[in-house]
Image (cartoon, rainbow, N blue to C red; front, side):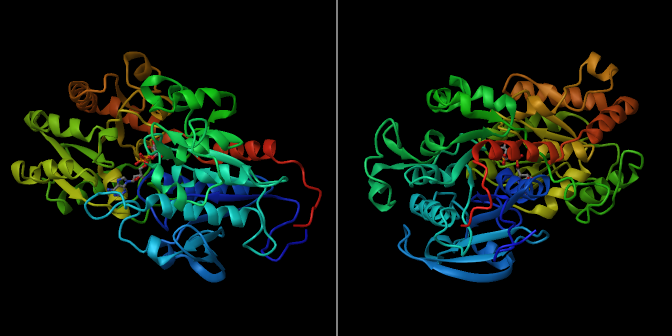
Length: 501
Ligand code: ADP
Ligand code: GLC
């Protein structure tokens, strides 16, 4: 089969996958995990050539392999940028980076060191959107234009509108909503700086409760809409979880589908994980005990195999009920032989409220404020229980990693967690299918009751082993979701008969 100048097979569907975070180039949460893994499986699953694209953050430019400067992109919002092509480390995926030092050479992806949004975020991500459109229509990368642009979250929300204004045949667009809480809303005064087609600032378009909204624009104009679990796809049509977008989403309901995220089962595999001190599987769990002892020692906890080690690994924010963790901490410490290890970063007040606990409960509470991929693996391998509250949860990857590592998640029944976990009840335990402990009410009291239930279950080693077996056997590989995305692309693209670009 002939290849073109960029190594593409001409009869394949070409997808530009644009995301603000792609693991390992840049990460603040699950969006990066999805963007770093899903495209590999999409490429492997079908007749699809895929190129990834993200902003030129310092980490991205440091880690991107085999970099080549392709061209200068002129007159983008925020100034000119260099388009750099390279390879995603650890894969053969190609990645385009929009390099504008003024916009992207900063310590945080979205916020400064005090957690405040960069004031020019609208311009920074408008630059990404415009650059992506130029690539998509064939104006940037020689011999390449996209059949489909796959947009992720608000940072890419202007792309569908910009492409909709492009003469046909134009690339089609898929917009994946990873989290409706992040909306990309900015004062209307930014409008002039975003180089948008005229007449877009109306309530039928960009305008959203007095602001301009990147996400609303994406939702309205994308040819196809997806979100990251079937349950969240239903929930966001209603007032409780729609976050103001329920009306807009209901209007596009027939184009919206929930595709459950997968996980990278190579990177997150206790049987081969090089980031943890010992490897293990359900038939040889001694390695998990070693991981626990090692973490207890490293984090200043009492080294005690019988203590129940609860881990909390999440953005320290209201979404993850980190405030409720703080509420219940005194009660937790009144339970015998219970330890807590926290790894997270987020709201300064929550960070501050946690910071004192290792001193107040020496040997029983350890807190690492910060972001550390290696520690995240070690924590998940070491824990007996992952405490993971969610006021809402589009999918929730951390509980899926915990399941794979035999660390039983305590989660509430919301969003993707309804689709991935089975709470322990007399029946589910009997049937050997329980893999989690559930709580329903999103409150501190319900969270505490769930911890007590989990600790009681752990007291019976046979029951606990059955829970761990079910957890570790669950299949969350990317194969099925990748095929589902492939089908969506297929449905959008008019078959191309070896058309020259
Ligand atoms: P969200 O995207 O809402 O933050 P997910 O559970 O889907 O939630 O994904 C979170 C990802 O971020 C997981 O890969 C998790 O391991 C990682 N993570 C969260 N906090 C930290 C941290 N402090 N250090 C390292 N990894 C973290
Ligand atoms: C979001 C959601 C999380 C989801 C992740 C990846 O940040 O909060 O639930 O797993 O994106 O899709």
